[in-house]
Length: 278
Image (tube, rainbow, N blue to C red; front, side, top):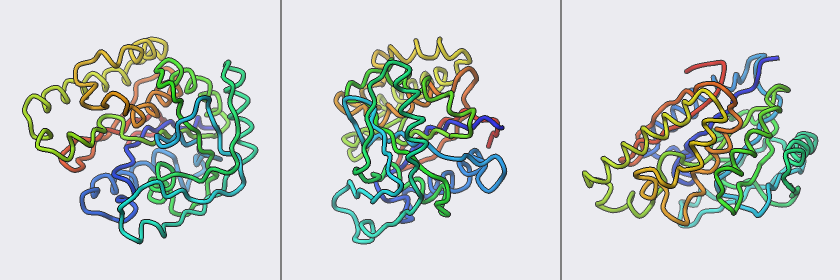
């Protein structure tokens, strides 16, 4: 069996990618065309399930959606009316949720299951574009309120073994940049901000492309000290970065691939560990 991939995607601005907003055009194309190829959708290499680590669900312990079906949680405000009518009917998987629970518990975590929470837009917005057929079961997984890079990396390492049984892992956030204060102000065009963000992006890329997974994890431990980190992800707002750290742990030994999309004056990176390069 082909080892299932790990993908840390930029999910874009709220529901806008699912609504076809022009500001998200490059991202829509990448999520709709690149990511399905990485996953092998529509081929014998397609995953039997997807664990989706979402930036929009933070808990004290790893928390796992474990219902057969899930409602959608429209966790945004001030959007067009059609954003609250979006539908995505992929099944959940109580069986895969147990597998996730077991590997996390074995790694020393104290996970819990949640059959009631709906899938937030970190799940259904990218998945509407990645797999509109909605025929692959999804298990939603929270990030940790601690924001500890070592704990998130350890979560990923624990999940990595599930890849060998055909379970793909997707981290959904905005891993390289998520600072709305800068994005919606003149600061986005400041030369100093641009220079620091370029240095940040390059260091992050070098880190995810570190071949040895143990060394990669050690590098992530100090990410807050990197130049540009607090502009890319402000203090108290690191949730869109953490799914990447889980993915970096799940990627195992090997060099990550990446692609870049221009979204609202920013370069947004997505990273992946897979047998297929796009």
